[in-house]
Length: 507
Figure 1: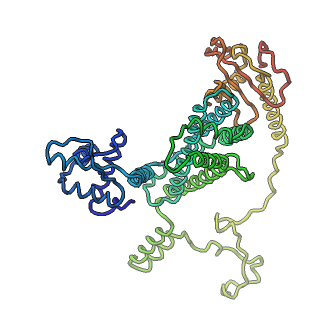
Figure 2 (figure 1 turned 180 degrees about the vertical axis):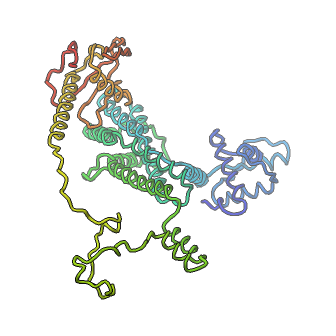
């Protein structure tokens, strides 16, 4: 099937198949000799080629089973030359279409880099929710069920292909050596930032998809596939009813979706394994970055230093220079303990050889500082009990202020943002951070946005205000004006029933 990709005329064979592929895109299923030549110029083949050579290449592709050669009996030919040029027409066989699609797919894989896209996870969750709503509505169209299921499978396939491609590139990046250190360091740093951004709220998105899969399982996946089959409107084929094979493909895709988010056997979902792979890659990349940074700080290694020192020793003119070089390189000076005496000098004669004299204890401090120990009173240990107590009181006070602020912000239900009216600046900063997190999240099908704090303890829900009015929040530092929203904030340990919106935040 792929013999056309090798040999001396592989480029011409590939151009001919590309010409037939371009014709198929324009719904031209058969081409005569002049049509093939015209399409070759369209796809970029500008080299001269004779009719005999082109016919030979078309015949060879036909012998390989990639082209069908048919006679055009519907045409009226005026001359024998027209008959020779227009009688035979060529079209792609199933093997030819498969071979051309395989080459295009191979080139696409070679040029693709893959990506970890959180938007795909959100799209999968949205399509699952939409299918659940369509199944619950008995009057919904089967064609809508089919199109939504196709979108879901398309997003799942994009997730799998991009994840596999990105993981392959990531592993090759971890093994890459010998690249330009500056570019290499920038790529690794950018990859670490990309992975860290992807891991934000990954668990929450994975749980959202798993919950949507469970809801759809309860509604009946078999019913979903049957309705999608009716909406697909498959054409009849000579081999029999295509419905069973189509349903088997849908069941296989659904099992793949479950394996990623909610495995039937209770094993660990693959999305969590992706979480582990990303975290391990971040750690490995940071270690490599540390080694690159350390190597840039040091101009040469210790081994290179010793080799250079050996060359200096080899080039020294005499023994005196060798001793000077040794002293300069290793810092070994004269003995500093020669002035030390025996505890009882009268027991040792001044004329006695050092080899025969008893040993004298040498202080370890003498080697590093050139001085012997001087024994005196030890310094007093500083009492830090007061500092620890003051820090503990400050920590409790800050914690109490934070809890009071969160308790004040707990709405106990949807309220308008404009109802907050006047706030202390610290409470206003917390509210602004929560609103910023919510606005950074894509709205769901109902237009609501939901987000949580980094520790997951505080949750905010945000919806556009029904009347679309303006909100005005006053703080000691100024006034903020902007669009009004319906806000619902939930905090742990808050008083049931929420706050009174007209109450001013404590200072």
